Length: 151
Image 1 (cartoon, rainbow, N blue to C red):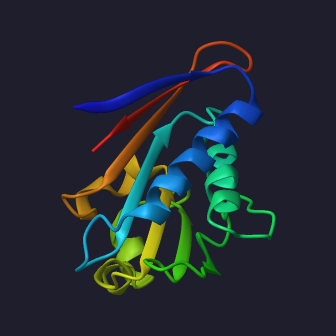
Image 2 (tube, rainbow, N blue to C red; image 1 turned 120 degrees about the vertical axis):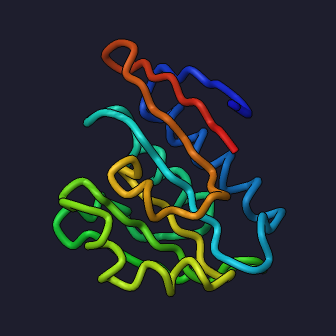
C-alpha cells in the first residue's frame, strides 16, 4: 500500500524528494536488528539515480554519487547516529539474484548500521527482506516523474 505519491517536474525536484527521505531516515531507525533496504524500481531514465544523488546529499555524502552499473556496488561511510554505511547497489546487469548473494548481500542486510539502496531492485526481489522501503519511479513526460513510496 502506498505511503505517498509525488509528481516531480525536474531533476532538482526529484533530488529534493531524495533529500526529504534522507531527513526522515536520519530521525528514525526503522529496524534496530538489521539494515534498512530501500528498493528502487523504474524504467531506464526514470529518476532513480537522480533520487539517490539527493538522498546521498541529504545523508551528508560529499562525493558525486553515480550509478555503479559496472561495479555493481559502491559504499560510502556515513556519520549518522543510526547508520554508519551507505551501500548503493545497481542490479541492472545481474542475471539472477544469486549473483548479489555472492557479493555478500546477506552480511550487508544483517548489519543494522547499513543503509542499502538498490536500483533495479525488481531483478533481485526474491532475496530482499520482507521489510523494505520500496520506491517506484514512472516517466510521465520529458522531465516529469511520478514517485510512489511503499512501506
